[in-house]
Amino acid sequence: MTGTYLDGGPDTSASGTGASGGGWVRKIGMWSWSFVGFVVAMAIVFTALGFVSEIVLPLTFAVVLAICFKPLVGTLQRHGWKPTAAAGVVVLGLLVLMAVVVIATIQGVVEQADQISSTTDSALATAAEELGVDPAALEEARAAAEDSSAVVAEGILARVLSGIDATVALVAALVLGALIMFYLLKDGSLFRRNMVERTSPSLRGDVDWFIGESCRILRDYGKGRTAISAIVAVVIGVASLLLGLPLVFTIMMVNFVGGYIPYIGAFLGGGLAVIVALGEGGIGTAVIMLLIVLAANLLVENFVEPKVMGQTLDIHPLVVLVVTALGGLLGGIVGLILAVPFWVILTTGIRRMRSSGYVQPVTDKAQQTMQRILE
Image (tube, rainbow, N blue to C red; front, side, top):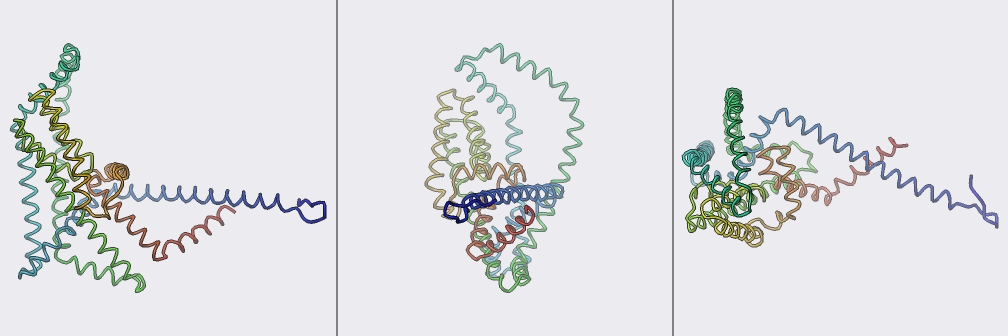
């Protein structure tokens, strides 16, 4: 019921307050249901991707590599190479390079397995001595590990069988990825032109811009990460040589490959170098190596990375950590490597859509729909 003032006028304060409160309740309800809908949609998408990950992951990696190496194919074509030959040479070169790096790394680790084991044991012993850990406790732990080896051995056959399945899946993914990459390198420009032409004429300019900007972001990120990884790997490798450490090649390769995974890869690669230094030279050598690792990564992050990455890829470290962790959770090693550039592409596309006026109509329609649902 509406009240009255003393002069007989209507009292609308109560109804106004109620309307205002109802408006806030409706807004909160709309945003809550929108968030629930977004989470459910993302869960469905990622669950579907999980079922077809054996296809999606090599496809994603092949697309990214094709985008990064497309300029090289263009250079070969300008020098008289046919598209098929240029794409084939690039794909074969990448496969050979990848095989050489993987085989050399695995061979180095296998050949130096005893040295790695003795270095780790020495590092544990040194740490126990310096930190005052009871040696008897370490021996008990070592004995328990040795006693459990028989139990572990019982599962070797199952491990071998699962390893065979994983090897077959890996080979299939490599073949599929190589074929996809070959055709994208050979006919990528044609695919892009057909994709743009299939969109509405009013959207073709924005779609073509988005594809070009996405390619530029991925190429800049790939070049930047490669340069950063190479610098850090060389610095740590030279430091390892000067300190007289073993496993120099392995340390360099782990730091180089780990450099493609922001922060996490640096932690793993630097940790390996510090552990080897601890086992070989003690606490003093380990501290020196730790300082070198920190200095190399901090200097690269603050001085080299902004120059090679550019302003587009200059995002807050906390965002990088969160996005990288989510990428690893959803996409494994491929997600760890590609999470940051994909996030930049997503935010760039959203900004473009907002500036072009595509987001507001969708938001208005969604708001009207949610209001009808809540009424």
